[in-house]
Length: 182
Image (tube, rainbow, N blue to C red; front, side):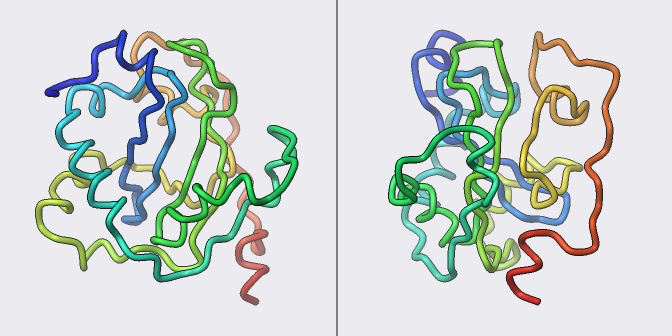
């Protein structure tokens, strides 16, 4: 498959990744939503990258976001086992906040983060090349939620209305993630 057609995107739950500004890898689960053009037009690269990630060995702890109750009710933390397995491989994990097909929503929330990030420099050259094609000037590890209000994020999706008003995320000296280690 050379590219993900619009119909395929709407019918499938596709995992895809971006490389953050600080070379952290963030994985997203589409839930039938539209993909950024650079992912949709490079299905082969995305499949190779997902296969690589699937075969990585866990090496760190997964930290489940304490903010999940804002987005949905969890009957138990065990329902997040699949997500935490990726975080244990050093990758940030985001999921679609509202599972809806097409362009109706591009909001994603953080599910889990790794205690230690996957070292980009240690990856095979082919994987680094694929990830470098997706690199964004976004520090994904600073976000608990990404949505249409954040222009750099929304501009990655086609045909999506981008509100003009947006406030940068507040930078606190001590985040919930940092408080776990200090």
